[in-house]
Length: 91
Image 1 (cartoon, rainbow, N blue to C red):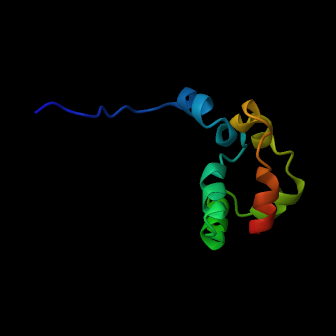
Image 2 (cartoon, helix red, strand yellow):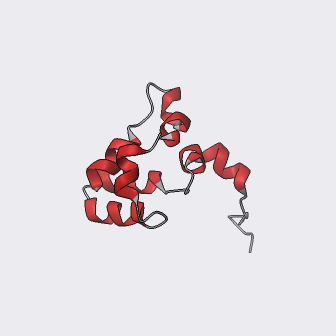
Image 3 (cartoon, rainbow, N blue to C red):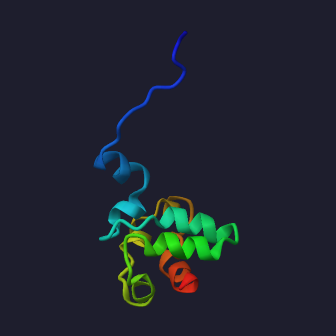
């Protein structure tokens, strides 16, 4: 039987190319994940995901320089997502 999908191990270059917001974050927060959860109304799950790599996520929502927003691919369409403010809302 022919294999339909090939499993490929990805490295840092793949993340930089495909998820630059997460790669730009100093603690590699899964911002794409908590943005999707917030958009779906799953605020508590989104907050838990934001807390996973960073127990001080609520502070970062206020004082972080937001390199994730600078790296956001959405800016190629119009403007980057307000990732820091969503994190602040979730906290």
